[in-house]
Amino acid sequence: MLRLPAIRPALLLRATAAPRTVLSLSTSRVGLTSTALLRSAQFHYSASPSFQTSNASRSTSSSSNSSSNNNSNKTNSNAPPKLSLLKRISLFTSFSFYSVVVLSGVGLLGLVIYYFVSELLLPTSDVQLFNKTFSIIKKDPECQRLIGTKMQAHGETNESGTNNKWARTRPLASKRGMDRYGREHVWLQFHIEGELLEPGTDALVRMEMIRDPHGSNAFEYRYLVLELPNHPRVYLIDSTPNPAVKAKSSGFLGVKWGKKDENNDN
Image 1: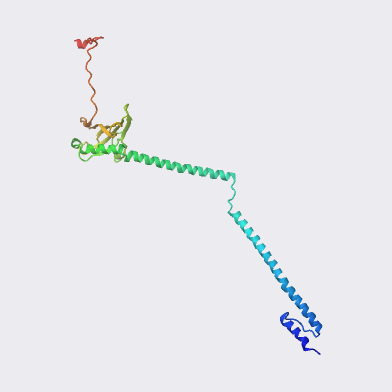
Image 2 (image 1 turned 45 degrees about the horizontal axis):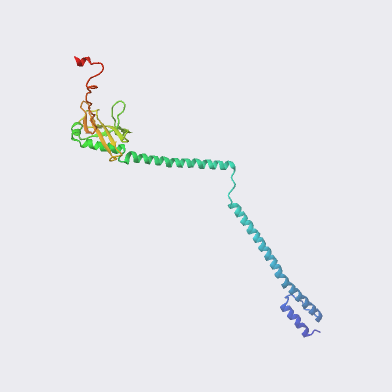
């Protein structure tokens, strides 16, 4: 017959250690079964953390390997590709060509700006001197009487001497030079039309200006003349020095040497 005190340890062991423990009828078997279950439970609880640690270390090493591989792939992808020699030569040639084009454009732009300022905006340019001269002619009463009040000035006419609607856009005939004294001379010539002139004819304006660097350093008129067809010249400004008249030489010691002029003797 079974004893109640022998059954209680088995029941306790079933409740705490293993849920599927079979009840033993003998006390010895109950003791052996409980001992084996305790050992298996201890082995299970002692072995499972080590397995988990090894698995965690393996997962950590694998993740570190994968991250290192990813980093190496990223560095390889970010690295610039190696170019061949032919590709480098073509890139250098194209860069040099575009650099030359850009520099040429900048130089050409600077040259255009220089000529625009020097030929149009400066007070000493031909255009400004032309405007100054034309304003003097328009205000002169003698010119108004000969040409009229409605004057139009333009550059040189064509080879046939006739004008057209593009006459005002023709360039002015101008010339600049230096004399032996270091003075700058400007010669300017243009044409003027008016209602009092005959159709197909115009008046010619000639002028010369001098700039003395040792004086006022400004252009001053040497002469300004208006030439009309079938009319004598009209000098608006004339500052040309009159040539000195040489006195007749009476010869050495008052005696004329050489061959005598027969006409004067007669």
